[in-house]
Image 1 (cartoon, one colour):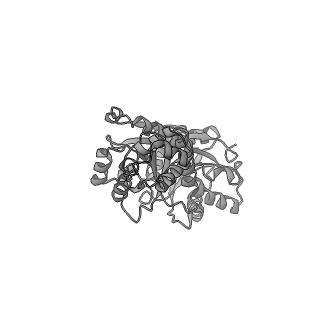
Image 2 (image 1 turned 90 degrees about the horizontal axis):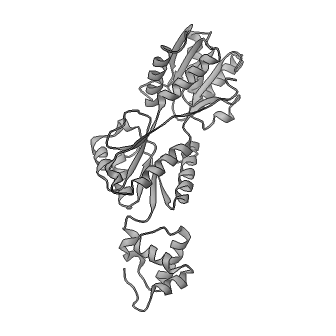
Image 3 (image 1 turned 30 degrees about the horizontal axis):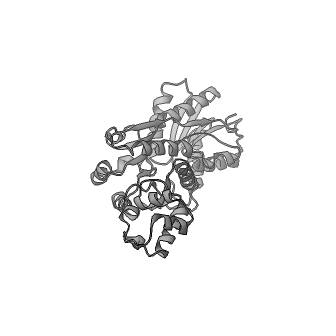
Length: 344
């Protein structure tokens, strides 16, 4: 950092309209400084002849108290828009700011993205978007050997043992859904998902569904029906999946849908065929982005963005301690079950 010899910390503080302590934290990179104050201090230093670009502790130090959040491009994506907002606000209450990296991982590999993020010398990174079973060895090595703590969100109950992770207890969600339909009097139930070759969450749903229906209750029938989806036909895929399921068994009276948006198409088919919900058919779905706004509102099992972000933030903050980094952490979260009119 190149100071004008006649400039003191007190001069910078006066010019920026902040305390000398804030200036000291900014220069040394060893404490929290709000974005507004950072901008004021940087402007004051530049005006006083201090070359901000030459400040190693500010621009290249790792103690800036900034967490990186890696998510897909938002483009109207409700789930990740809400997650980015909640994560940023929750981090702020803990004295951290957030840098959001919105990246389409279908167009680049995770390891390359991480290498770019790590150059920003963040305090920690949260990745809530990549199925952990898809990590290649190079990416695993980057994550496990990084001095910057990295936490991932996974739907798989057996995460890599050396990666800090928040894990969705998917089996618990399916168990709650099946037991609820049984308690509601359903005897002919169906799980409707995309093919397992298209969705890893469908793999988990189908496996958990088979396990629980074989041990819970006495069913007249149960079935799994698949229909593929693409970005533009989410609801259409649910509609076609329901059509195939009811062609196989018109007596279906309980449905578990893959996601709430997929389930919107299932509802569409049921209404078109004159079935009453919940009198004739009761429905449960995973995810809770749109479920409360469907007609009728749909019962769901889902992890809230709040619980996922809170656990991730708490883990990242604990991992700021070098001693804590020697203890890999896996936190298992049980989905919240929300009963709405689709099963009442």
